[in-house]
Length: 210
Image (cartoon, rainbow, N blue to C red; front, side, top):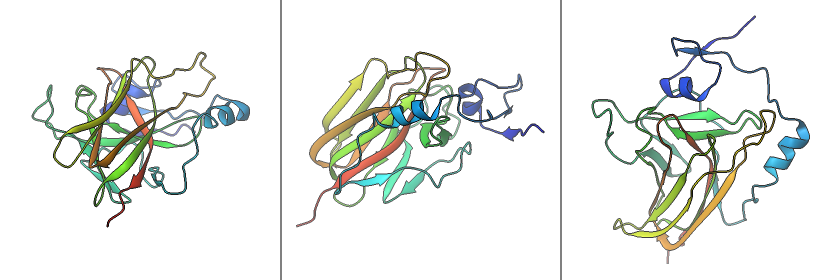
């Protein structure tokens, strides 16, 4: 029996096995990668340190676009109004990393990938924010940290995130860390039309109150 699941337009773009109507997809039977390959790709992600709070999205529902998500005090939403489809409602959603079963958060607007994903930190903010990322082949990534006044305090970027070299390899992860005395929010951007960039984890070191 073939299971068919209704998905959003973005998942229709991201999943290769999409029907012409772009309304359903057939989930693969399991990861193509071997256990050794999966272990190797996971080993590239540094472990969280003891004072970091980790948001991993593992309790989320895949493929359901929503306007906002909050987990461990962090609020996730798109950073501003849509540019190419201003009449639509900005939405985010969660997408699976097939090899590991992890869940990542993405911009759900297939034609408005230029709008950044905004992650607002709780309380006094954080002194360090780490994002574990993965995405489509050749996708650029830009992570920017801002203070409570909207001033840019740190940023990291890559021209293209790591990509797998063969279809049976897991999609690689990329880890980027930003640091500043009091980061209030972080914005993630980079994908162009037809691309996606998922945050697999957000880790942050809360600023200690006096």
